Length: 387
Ligand SMILES: Cc1ncc(COP(=O)(O)O)c(C=O)c1O
Image 1 (spheres, rainbow, N blue to C red):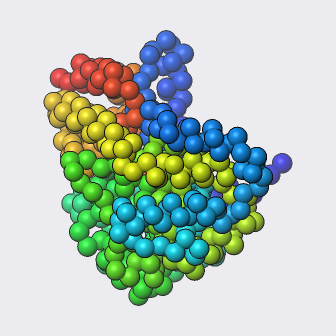
Image 2 (cartoon, protein in one colour):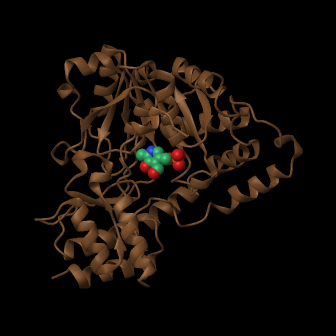
């Protein structure tokens, strides 16, 4: 049996060594606490679960859904975008359901890249921005996100050849893994870049609803001209504790939305109608559940940043996402520090290098564990690494 060459193009799994060490620790009886993965630990809001239950009781939700999505779902997204961002969307041509932002981002690569084409991807960044282009037969071209630039890519630094070959650019603010918020003027520069070089700008809006200190994250589509050159992928996964539900939407440029739809009719059969109706309930709930989650993560962020500062880590408190991103102490690589923390404290943190070469020298802590476990993890880190 020989899998396709396409699979050989995917880089080796960077967490493999860490996972082996975690398994070893667990086998030795260590109570390992994982601050690695970003998956909300609190349940989906009860009104959303109730809406799913009610919708699942309706036999008219049981058949193949349409890839276009129910009008209730598209209308709910349009109403949310209008209320939340002041962005007007046409539910018939500018909105489609997606089975999570991950699926959508991956499939946009298939829809837009031919061999030789490039996707401009943040480094460090969500791994699908680089794995997606490779599997689709194109190539990722890395845009460094550096702390001194507020983790914004320098679009002027993109090589002339890469500008011409690029068909896609992935942006993501609030940003995983850096926790950075959209730097002033970046979206405007993105629109200008997309126009000039005929590049589809894809803004991954997975964390717009998870922000702190009163910061309100914008939609890329608020930027004048954004809809001419771009789409946004809005996910309910993180803000509404719905990672398992696979619920997102692609919104914006009608031509791009239509290309995605053409591709998707050949790949999957849409989002379960009952899940779409539950998503309508989530979006209609207003800001209540979102606000509760913001309070929870802000508290955990303060806890993490406080202890890290005490043990001598030069941490910047993020204004969004569910992550804290911080430099490893002098003399360490990302991998060696994460291994040390696991060894000394039984705590799993993510090596920044897993998110791209410019993630080297950093580590990421996820805020998605219960407060008492998080507190314990931090206490262990303080007592074993604090000196
Ligand atoms: C930046 C970013 N985009 C997309 C995703 C995946 O979102 P979804 O659950 O909607 O597929 C994640 C999940 O961690 C993420 O961090």
